[in-house]
Length: 598
Ligand code: ATP
Ligand code: MG
Image (cartoon, rainbow, N blue to C red):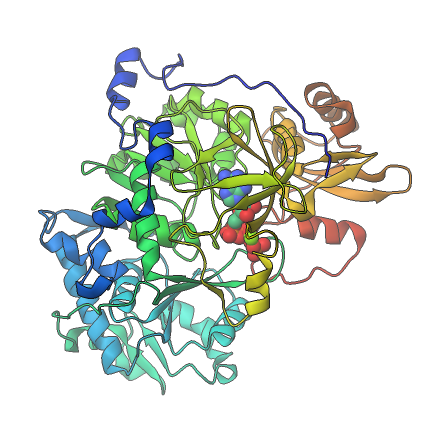
């Protein structure tokens, strides 16, 4: 596949670049020379996954348990009384739990599940808001060898039925408020034996429903964590559904090696950090980097039950003195939309490291982050299927805004043509990875054919994303393979057009698709949400088009722009271009179970 790739010159932004918010002294304070991974090249050349195993705790005979590594081992390494979890509830009440608290509570959970007859390999789904019980349940299920099924609390009955039916879930843990979404579909879930309800009065529950609190009180706080084969399943998580029907991705206990190492290198977690991952554990980021990875490193984790709004989020950072903050482009774009003033009204001085994942991070957002937070935002790439970060901007490397960074030590990633042959630097192709990293998916739930599709060519894992690599080995995301637009013989990725659009002050968000066109094959159509203070006019649309033409390329500007109040997004905040396209062309919308409701 011979394709054109825009080769825009990017200026490297380094940690030491001048910016208005921080003085030089502050920068030095925020960036002590020592980061967990100091020399990328050296580590990349010498690293072996076998060495990483030494950082984890194994039982005799090579058995392991990810939950033991995340919690139990801190009973003996001096972290017993360290805060594991800061919970801020929806009313802003703060509770703290030490590793010892989580240890005992998750032991009780494990015992309670055993009493219910949960056996190794049974699927236990967690349908909870971001409260203590979510964390306790996840660890408790893993301790007894059950398969954790994380579910986002905003899922509606259809999304729940699809996932619980497909996975043949045996137990579901939820709240009285959320239980209403299950009541109407229960008769369609023949495998679901128990619904365990947090904070419910047993006398008010129906058949097959049990009070979480009663179960926990009756269960012993002492439990011997199951010693499991490293290939024993740990969690089953459904993908975001951005490109189609969500796939059930199965991961194993051995994944903890990847969780541990990447949390150490990419999140750069250290003992004195207060870490906040804004992703809900219903998504892979919230499970891997909100629970297992940081806890395996003994970090204190913050969880916030409330919804997004700029001031509340900044308050969480200041109140908790968050040092490491892992978030997503959609949130960062909304924060940018909320403006600079609100940033300056808060301190945010505790922050030392910011990261982003889930969607392409527009360069404009990185530059804005430098300006207002005085810190670069570290983009990194991975998928539900990859189970851990694979490509990242590490703290030790200069950031190129718009790039996802470089493959981590132990990861061979490449960009190849349709036959699996690596393309030249600067050429667009398919982003692939050589199988063998510890957290790789082990199964698409009961769908071997789908699983095999990922590995169909020359032994590569095909990610389904398109990218290019620059001369210095940095990877640049172009779009989902299905989203690449072919206009008058040019191949254009939606991301670069969207990024050029959001550079215009009137544009808060943009979603770009290819629209069939007799003359050009496809034309580029952009759906745009305007920033505060701007209103739709012919003149403004022309201005935005001209801006994109000038800053990106004449062939890559959107010939059509439609202003919208919102863009369709998954509940995890990803723009659903396939819906924009289906609506535009009057085609069936396909699976919309992950669609966010306004
Ligand atoms: P589905 O597979 O159901 O269509 P999804 O691919 O959005 O949904 P996830 O596994 O949650 O489900 O997301 C992984 C995808 O998110 C990647 O394949 C990529 O397209 C996108 N992504 C993640 N991180 C980045 C990043 N840093 N830059 C660009 N894209 C990213
Ligand atoms: Mg995907």
